[in-house]
Image 1: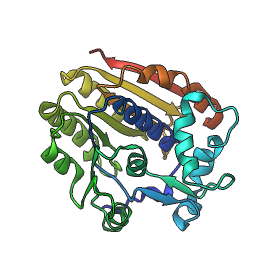
Image 2: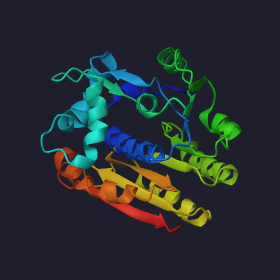
Image 3: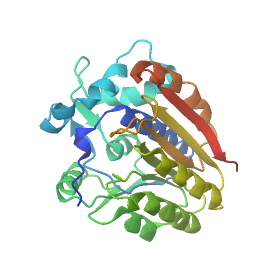
Image 4: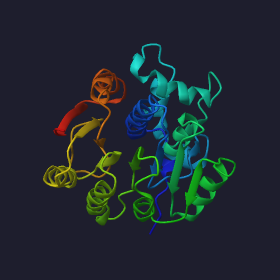
Length: 279
């Protein structure tokens, strides 16, 4: 188990949507002076070399971030996300891509905190090295669901939790629901951002049904599909489910997601932007 390595997929279309939503949520939380804690349940190493053997084996970033980061037609709403990627690279060369903890590292303030969990030994070692001099960060080689629940609620009662499991096991689809219900019970005002892949649409339909029946309020869903659902193997679309979304989030995503459909998608590409549960 624990064979998944995100480096194969770093910077792909799923990362573009996930990290754009993450940037929007962090930026919104920073509008208030009071500090907050960022939790990452499956952090990965935090930074990816796109010239590595992993990334070069799949070249998935070429149909994701590489298509938009320097596009002169880029919508303004996607600019902060792409500017962050640009800040880590030479002007004409895309060699590095930040994972979600890397994005948080660059965006959070000195008074904010990070709680990062990663079970994969190699990924954990890289994550620890990337944050070895960052006093804001706790890095744990521990099940991210368990570690996050132990630390909720954060002392300052403001927080963002990114849930990004590999979904290697069927149980992951059930665990994310159990985790969200338990976490909401401890920290109802937190912002929760759940990433999901669409490999089997029925599993995502079940997640949506379970959340609607959970009693949790204020749930939004954003999805980017490169092509129509298929019975074949592989991820055709992915999305983000956000609990307690910033009130600006849906408007921001709506203003840029059609650009991603047209720029990254194939025939049958589509997007979803929905309020699953009202406040």
